[in-house]
Length: 387
Image (cartoon, rainbow, N blue to C red; front, side, top):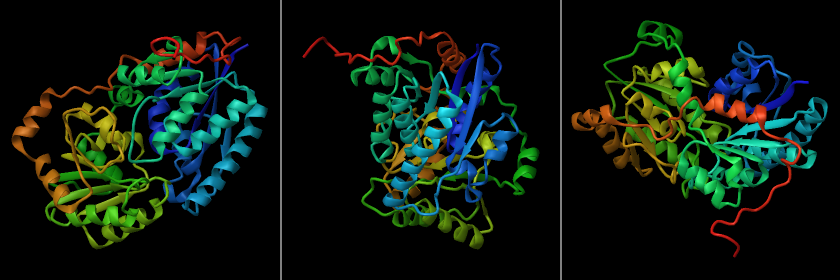
């Protein structure tokens, strides 16, 4: 019988990372892919991105979430409902292994359901730090609930082991997102402009800003500071992609809509999709905001990332990344550095620390061959011996 590999995706960014792995699983005759779609994929306000997924894969289950309210209370209740719903789906699908990626609150619900159903859990992108967001705690919690770990750097692999995970269960494979960049046939400039209905200028920036959930400033204050800095860019075209479904994301998205309505040099998308997003990076001068993509993938394009605030604090960063505080003058100085000739010259030699060799194939082979009989039996690994 084929080994059944279930994979859950809840956001556009996460799906983009998982896509090469999904292809690997689907194309292996000894494996059966079970794809579960939830979260913002099923929301019109976030672009109904499940339709993009359906163009590539069969979806085995769709689980809607109530994301109309973004308070901590509402999101907690949504997580509880997701745990209930995905439990029912998993009882029907009976996967041999579940695969989840990252640090989203949706994935914590999935991981908890797997724990109670005795389904082995494989976790991608563990061991990382994002000290400006609650995602940091969620990621580490998922690590302790997981049985296999696929990290994006050796430092992160060591951190997972430091958390008590057995070294034989931890694999440093690199970032799936970097692999996608190498395999996609990107759009040329004319194709890209046509696809977004927007003409690029001499200067162009891509902006993605998510709520910094552990900041002393509320999301409205955070994003107002960024918009104030962007006001000085009179001859720059700006492509916005909307914030995710974290607490405060709706406020940021409403502010983007208002800004674009009054600024003809800008345009906004709920989701560009992977092809248009990576194609955009061929033509923009830099990426501005606090998305993990700015840290993990953008360095491979050898363009600057202006990383704002503490949301990504703790992650290993390439030398192409400019990190500034959430303060208008600091952001303006960062924007100026994006166009600094000496800085741009240095980017020609930038190496992306998250680059691996065929990470999707390595993960698939492990999922395919790992012994499942005793995989649920975890032992705490003490670094340096017994305490």
